[in-house]
Figure 1 (cartoon, rainbow, N blue to C red):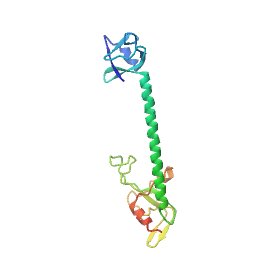
Figure 2 (figure 1 turned 45 degrees about the vertical axis):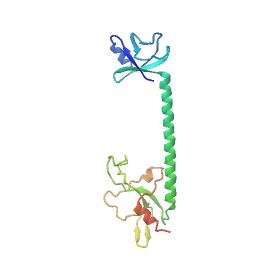
Figure 3 (figure 1 turned 180 degrees about the vertical axis):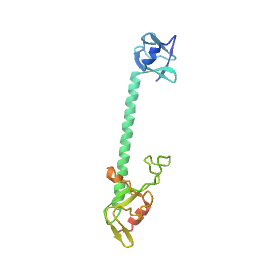
Figure 4 (figure 1 turned 90 degrees about the vertical axis):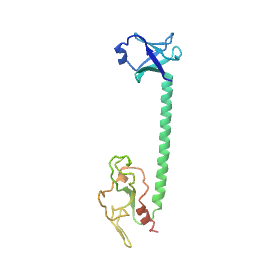
Length: 194
């Protein structure tokens, strides 16, 4: 619990330069730092309790070192739990992507990649310069000729024309993660191969 403190008398300006500072609660429930003395506004902490003093919103406040350390341990545990959950979620996402990508019966080798819908960094973006409706395409490693469908290596399965901003990102080369194909047209064409 953070306790508010009050200062009686003139505050030595050098005291501010020493903050935050650690001290112990004296026998008369005061906190003494050099010639400066602070008193609790409400309930004081037990005598001998080691506290840390700092300024918050223009007021002197303190908290016991034991509470600060306990809060830090709790924060570290929560962070570790969030990291564990994120790793589980990513592993699940990767398993789903692998399962879907393996189910595609495309007769040539391919990889998933992005042809970005550029947006810069806006609220509708994904935080990487791509708009949230950017999808992963099936990009061919080899030429594909099947009936009326003709694609050359490096083209997405869904389109023979790259169009404006048509460069693929190449994330498959940089990242170790597997991406799930999300382009509806690529999935529709891939579904025609048996």
